[in-house]
Image (cartoon, rainbow, N blue to C red; front, side):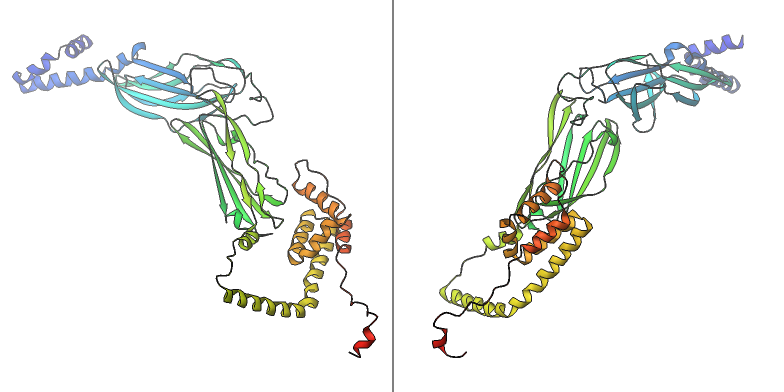
Length: 435
């Protein structure tokens, strides 16, 4: 009788309006009955149409995704019940890699004009192979308030089929090269400190390349590209990888670093590097590019840009200064051999250690100190081919083995020009008298 009276009180809101005309005791009793009726409302929330959980698979386009392409799972729940405890059980995903995008979200909503609680979770999954797969139901374990007590309820979603297409073009997910990179967008940022065109031989610059791709995690980005160009020394630094979580999917970021040094005085072009990627929105292959850069040549550029004399007087002063420098140079001829000898000793030590990069650095230093010696090396039948073999080993694309470094150091030392000898006296030397 009490439950039947409570139901009638809940269905006839006009009785609440009549409370103003009732005695105070009866009005209070009516309000208590209405409150008890609302407390009993969660018992109706246990009906099937009041508890729902859905899972929707979203892709970047209407076409079937390819392996390792992102698929977003939107898990949404709507509950017309008073919930005390909850726990969403995610099924095992044996054919997918996955990551959750942020925390679960609870919010207020309405269903058919009645207040309800909304639940939302987003999970990014990445199929690992082509084929047809089924995502098993998610199960939301709820503890709802039922009258004066609590009741455990499990709400299940429907299974979700996912069709994963097979790649038919060149490359693709199964190919080792090029790296498979499916993403809605890919960007490349290239930064140098200092500018590479201002470098002299042996001076270092730090190159930092940042690769960013949407719809991927950081482990899906390619390894560090190879920078190798004849005449440039490169030393690879550490790789930093980071995954940023957004409601639209993860954003992967990788930062690659190199220390770059010119090994020759001429300006050298560091070639561009192409990074192919698959546009998951347009469904076509594209290319991102690490741009080409000019490295070195600062000394030659300064010589080429030197302005001509502005007047004959300036030219005369410049000539006198050059004459003075020439006289000073005559006194330093004997002293120039000292740095060359020290460079040759450093070259010999590097050759004995078998350090190819140290040998090339010593060669670059000697070429800067004594250009005539560098010209003699290029003409020498043994030193010239030895230097070419060393450059192929350090900068060539094939990774050729270095030559005999100790023997190369000896050949370079032998190719040094012999000191100038005084000219022999002519047949008329006696007529000049004693000196």
